[in-house]
Length: 282
Picture 1 (cartoon, helix red, strand yellow):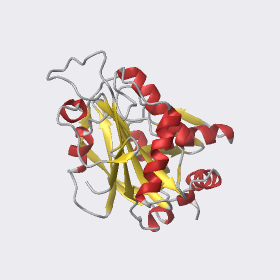
Picture 2 (cartoon, one colour):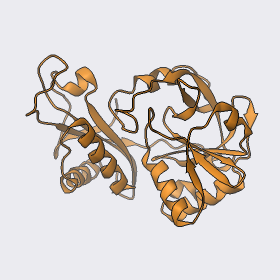
Picture 3 (spheres, one colour):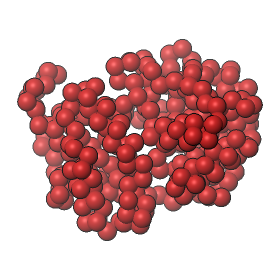
Picture 4 (cartoon, helix red, strand yellow):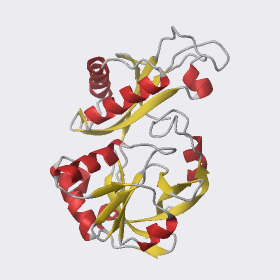
């Protein structure tokens, strides 16, 4: 994996072979957009990391320490204008077996990467997405968190090689659309904006949370509830979001075509641009 990696305040190139993140996916991560040397939506990333750490009983470094280490990594990498940071926190080294030691010492690793330049038409004309065959497993104990186990997303992403397809939407066992392999998803049905509930599977993305918050501040109606594929086909607009891209309108999914960007999606992109999500400035 390309990029520059740091352990604490030092560049590193190796990881102990007994790390539980390597053996069991026992850990968490955040993928953060760096713009003009600063981590975007930092407080939301820290909040998700800390709340997930509480749920898994993994001690997360204090926010000030995390930020100091991230700022050092950004500065040392030389990628200060535009980059992608990945913060990984594992439970640390441990003995063989699933049971973890109560006194384990978590390990924090930070990677800094170049951010790929996506085609401008992804924002201007929308993207094509597909429905994935692989279904997300139901597990409320892990729902919402960004754990190191991403095998469902790896398998789902392997289902297509067509570069014209930007993303694949994933369903749960009941056929409800939950999220994409790398994005959250919103549906527009008339004046209603709906995003799937993340209660038994999927990841609660920070951009999803940011959109919900700015919609509330703008007095827009937003519903968080299950969405079936039949309901998806009846929608007028669909848009994707994640921490790196902001919002991508969807113009086609599984043979159905949508307004891209439709009027509601355009309004939300304007709100995001005003909040500092520069990718949404058209």
